[in-house]
Length: 355
Ligand code: FES
Image 1 (cartoon, rainbow, N blue to C red):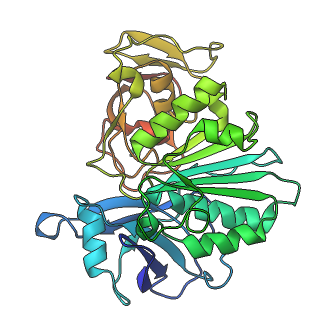
Image 2 (cartoon, rainbow, N blue to C red):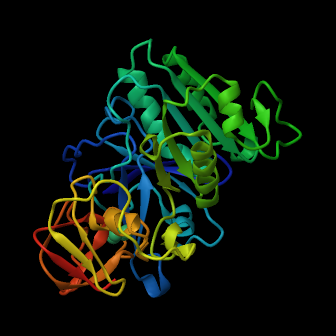
């Protein structure tokens, strides 16, 4: 794709608008999805891949018609983000995947609570565009966002305009360290960090669907608070920090980090093919309630690593000792023979994994 233009959104966030280099129509996408961007940002110009949430209007209305917008936060140690901030300019071309990812709004009229921190705002923007388009006036929508201060608060005016289009939506912006020029009640609503107590005080129902995006510590904290309140896991949807997920941002399976021994998953036993986690000494029947082998491994506390969960980074690669799998979605590039990308693989019969 070709960079059409770049737009500064805050002190450390710049949006990059991308259009097809040959002018072709762009594939449709759903709010919450991301694209993988490959850039020669590594040592000696080596390719690096990162995922960035699409931050525009998924209906591709003007000014988004036939263009994708990503918004990149410059991270101090972000190889790709620093490269893009330094080099992205109109006319530059980048290798870009089709939109992918399962993070997105559930259908129906269940109340929606969007909770973001920092650059985690990007998929929320797309979701707000989708809600502004589709949600009837009866649908309850909350959006809670945390930023450091006004200088790091990207998209403030755009979000205000969007909120005005969603009559049923309530917004709260928290600044953790407001600057002297930031006025409470104007630039932001509350000082400090977001919390579930704040949501409860604003009348958020526990039965809502919660969508979280931000840095990993924020996600862990928010998920723990929501669980403590009694929100079921299936109502908590999260995207890890849409900007800088990549090969260097590995995330351990929280269960393995706590050294929980591998075990059979909770809930009813599956009736599908047998999945053997050979190193863990565990044999489990597959169930269609898992979206991929990675989900099953996590449900069993089998130690696994992952990052993108969409077949891009290869962090979840494992040795496939026996059996066949199929991919959905297809990985961006296939793993070496004898290995499998757990995050997007389902079994086609009995499978043995060296895990
Ligand atoms: S977690 Fe990135 S490819 Fe599977």
